[in-house]
Length: 74
Image: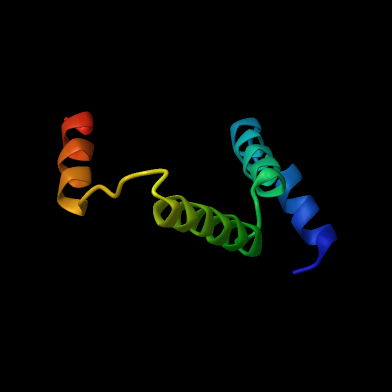
């Protein structure tokens, strides 16, 4: 499918459908890429590991984290 066909199809959508399409397109431009997300997560994991190693933070058992999470969403 080429650009002209997509453009023509988009312009023939209803106003509501065009609005939804525009919102999705804008979000796709603002959202970080998969590579950026992976890099950010690796950086955060590294920082957290350093904090644990230095004793700056204390680890919390997973079952306690899940218990608190469930209590917050109920």
